[in-house]
Structures are given as C-alpha cells and as structure tokens.
Length: 429
Image 1 (tube, rainbow, N blue to C red):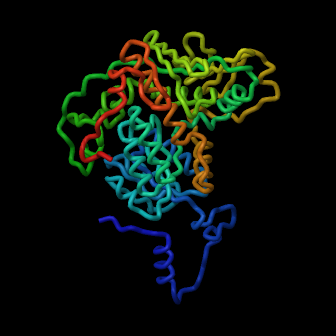
Image 2 (image 1 turned 90 degrees about the vertical axis):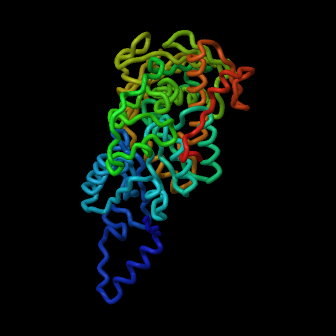
Image 3 (image 1 turned 45 degrees about the vertical axis):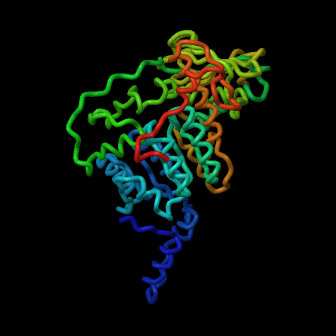
C-alpha cells in the first residue's frame, strides 16, 4: 500500500511527537549558513533513471533549493543505484524506492518529477505526472510521434504544469550565444538553419526471446509500457532498445534532432510553427522550408563534424546562416563564425553541451515563478513535429507538405496515417 504524505500532515506529526521535548532546531532547518529551509525546497522524485537519468539527477543535486526523495523504476538494479547515490548525497537512508511510478505520483509531498524512461514512455509518463499535479523535467525525445506531441502540450496546458524538455543545449552558453546572434540581426536576415542528425535507419529485428525474470527484479510488462509487447531480452534493459520499433522514435532522427532541430527552430523564431515542406534528398540530407522562405537543413554529422561542418566543434553542431554572415556551435564549448567581428567582446562560460545544470536551474526557477521554461511543452510540440515530419518524408522517399496550423499533412493520407499510434492496454491515457 502507498501511504500519502503531505507536508501539512508531516508537520502536524512532527509537532505531536516533540511536545514536551526541548526545541533544538538546527541552523540548516532555518535556512541559515547558506542552506535552504525545508519548507522552501522543491521536492523531487524520479521515474526510470538510467545512465542519462543519473547524470540529470547529479545536476539536480547541485541545487540546494531542491531535494530528491524517491525513485520509481521497474528494474530493481536501477532503483537501488539511485537510492545509493541519493543516500550518499544527503548522508541518510531516506530515499524511497518503488517498482511502479504510482508510488511517486501519489505522494502529495513531491512537487516535481524527473522522467527518463526511454522514448516509449516519455509522453505517457509526463501526462500521468501532469494529471497528478507534478511539474516535469522530461528527457528527450519527449514523444514518439506527432500525436504525442499534441497530447503532451495539450495536457501540460490543461493542468497548468511547468514542463521542461531535457534539451539542455538551450541553456548551454555557446549555443545560446549562437542563437542570440541569429535572433538579434547580427547575421542579417536569417536564410538557412542547419541541424546535425544521425543517419536514419530502418528498425532492427526484435532480439531473441529469453526467459522473463522475476518481476521483482525486472517487471517486463511495466518496462515495455505503452509500446507493443515483444519477448523479453535483457539487452533491451541495458540500452539495446535503441533502433527497435516501438521503443525508439522515428528511425532515430529525433535522437539528435530533438536537440539540433530544436535549436534551429529557436534561432529561426519558429517555436510556434514548423516548416511547411520536407524532402528527403538522401539518407543523410533532409531539406525543409518554412512559410517565410527560411530553409531548415538536416544533415549528417559525426564525432568530429564530417562534411562541411567546422572541424573540432564537437558533436551535435548547428549552423545559422544570414545574408550577412554565419555562426556555428558544437559540444566542445566553442563557436566559429564567418567574421571575427561577430564574436568580438563575446564571451561564454565553459560548459559541455551534455551538462544539464543550467537547464535544471531554469526549470527550478520556473517551478517557483510558474513562468514558462526555456524549452517548454509548446516548443517541444513544434520542434518534435518538425523531426517527425522530416522522418516521414525519409520513410516515404518523397516530398511531403505539412500544415502547421492543422498539424496534418496536406492531401496525403499515407503520411497522415503515420502521425498516430495506439497505446497498448492498460497503458492508454
């Protein structure tokens, strides 16, 4: 059974057991010595935190105005790892573990959740969290298809929750500076935005069936969740779900595109729309065009920037081109530009592109102010839809036209059938 605990009930209980005892309150409880009083802390729980989730959680630890208190995961090993990390961080044994996310979502004392369960679960878990009154920090891709982009944004708005997608490059200083140059006219009129992507590939065959483990160690049904059920293979639970139908979104285009297309949308001032045409030129090149004529180019990049990306900038580069110049940014904390003058007197903190700390700070601040985070559910709606429309163009091998107002392909029944899917019972929402 799950016992609901509220802050008010906790305070009442604590008061009852301390009647007649000396009142010795540590300075930390009063918020002195640089600490934050418990009543002012954002209480955080986790849902499905694997390797990337642990990196994000470590970023939450660095902010003393929040405290992580519980982990839900269908894998025993992973929830135990998070408990050990958290208990070591806070010097206690208080972190609670659950094998079902309801354990976290039904706790009234938890304000916000970190969701990092894998593509198949992101939208469904986020909607359940929103309905439970939690604010949400969700890893990317946040959706599996266009339908989920719509459902996610609609539910977040309906329940008035704060939602931050884990596309942390919006908060990384060198990427932000590149976007500022594009948006503030320093490149002239923006004509093209370029996003690095991985090579798209057909889904792999399911892994060979293995005997299912005891659900107390890995609950396979809960792990699969809303995706179609396939036979168990432990490798899926070790990260080998990437590239498999139902587990990985849109033939892997959003794996990087959720970051790079997102930045291009931001630089082009297109957070509330999408391109209207998409054409897959080759396996590593997809071209799109916005209604105002700006081009979005999605093209391959590897660890060192293959093709005509600037060498040495690192993974996930983006390039913004105007009629007076261009700028390019990548994960190695650097910038390149068409003219040294564009970067004169410009400085930025040295922060890796994978570091979520500043992005988490933006989220926590918005939890307090109820303002929109830098990568909110509406930015996700349109940025992710652009990724899915591009992937559908690749899959169909032809140009497609998309209406960003109706959020449908124009006169294309085949493409429109690829916008949606049906969740597996009992994980429908």
